[in-house]
Image (cartoon, rainbow, N blue to C red):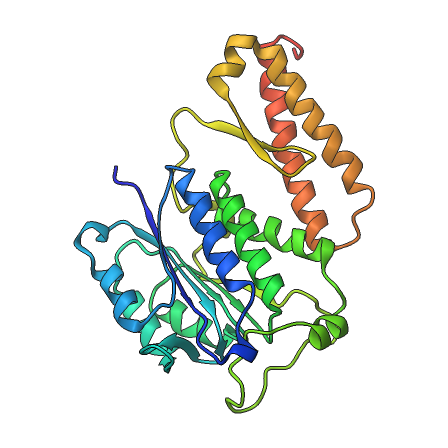
Length: 306
């Protein structure tokens, strides 16, 4: 089976005073993530023009392999800002892009990481795309980069789109400032003077939403198939990820596997005590359920259960 492809288009096209200081980090960290992982091929397009985007979408070697499309940059309602030529800006028609992406065989997810892109979600869903991540109002630049990076890190762990989105959103909720603070102090990814300005929500700090078809189950929507020899990826306290391969754990014995899952369970149980945000609580409870399933399976293999 050919390796799936994600195409990422990034455009930072406004004058220097409105440049998105975190967009380059979003591009580079996502690119670096997939360079270290062979489960997906990632094609990042910096300073993206419409020609660049369609060139990659139509590339012969990508046909039947494109599972995700990511946009990062200024946006508003149904418009996405792209490069035209050096120093020139194109207000691209997002609905036209939705219509084209609907013809891309195998595409599962579109991630629109700009301001107020939720109005486009209906167009992408109407074109037949299973799932769309979009924003309901203005998004803060750093928060946008953080959420995108967190999301693709979770995807790289073998999680579904629904699981990865819940986990990434929970991480943002954990550290997010109040809406008032974010709105006043931060750069945003909106299109200036493009009709009515998107409104910041009164109580919600994280404006991203996951929109999907009626017959799509986000928790069962995967961008790539898990490898036959799966890896357990765990996050150390320092935040640096490392991989413990099942084959190595098996050589050390199933009891070591059991102890690893037990430590992970203890961590999440302790963390859950302090969780207030409903989204984060749901994510932690879901992960605890998965951990308990693993412990039950290993316990039976070790003869701990009747």
